[in-house]
Length: 457
Image (tube, rainbow, N blue to C red; front, side, top):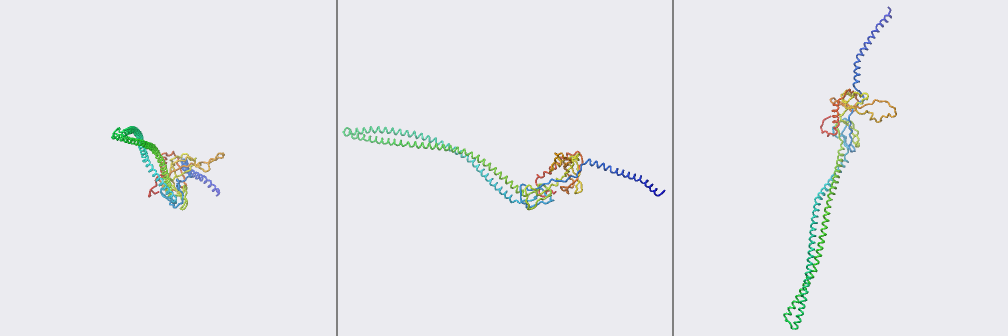
């Protein structure tokens, strides 16, 4: 047999062996890869995986509250852990200190005016009733005086009338006696001249005549006196008129005194207005003091400062952030999961979070699934009215809480992560407790500031 024929024979002898070995290798590789392939298919079927996920935190942007001004001191720096109540930066407080001083002065003035009106009101409440009682007593006295003067006038009138009548009667008697005496005197005087009577009898008649003349003069004097006593009636009448006027005046004084009671209502209303003004002044003082206190901008939470937007000397405007910080206890993962992979994802399911920057995986659980997709918050809303529509798979934000029993100190907000969520029915009990704990942590903003030397981060 030639050499060529030997080579051909060997070649044909090796070919079946090579095919057998290749087939055996293929069968072996297929047998080896089959379990892995099955496990991979089962893994992908039982888990939702996304690279569109980030480590996030609730950023707190701190700026001046109700005040603006030049920054005179910045105490916060990046990567600094501060406790709630620590000073972050300070504004120039001169103008706010002046405002507080002016407000304090206004409060003092308002309080002084309120005190003055309280004293005046107390005085009115004490004096007005006394004045009314005094006026009423004066009116009663005036009425008594008027009644007495009326009686005096009546008695005086009666007395003067009686005296005049008596004097007139006496004059009549005296005139009659004097006429008789005069006649006796003339008759006996003529008889004496004719010596028809004695001297003694003539003297007695003369004395009687002179006596009657004296009695007549006395009666006329009494009559003149009685006539002049009519002036007493006029005086008594004037006294009565004055008493009547005094009574009317006292009645008017009572009315005025009773009307003064309305001044108490006016004083009470004025006091209420003054109290409102004092309350307003105190409110303005509180605002001024609060603005003054707000020039010292303090940390609203305990956390890490991650950004400082201004430096000493810059002007800070109220409501504009100067320092940004976050609470490391509130770190969470937001996984933007495709809507086609949402089947089997439920709150409470376990999740694996791979941190790209650290090269390690952390455990977590799904806290909640957002009720809307990210497209709902797009700056350019979708418009499919024209009919030109291409379906785009939407992504649903899913929040994941990391387990606290792991080392989370190296985490940084904003890290890209890879999230794997195991499918399952969820865990409502864990979700309820986790949400309660999240609300507790989130409400620490309302808690009092931690004392110096408080817990470290």
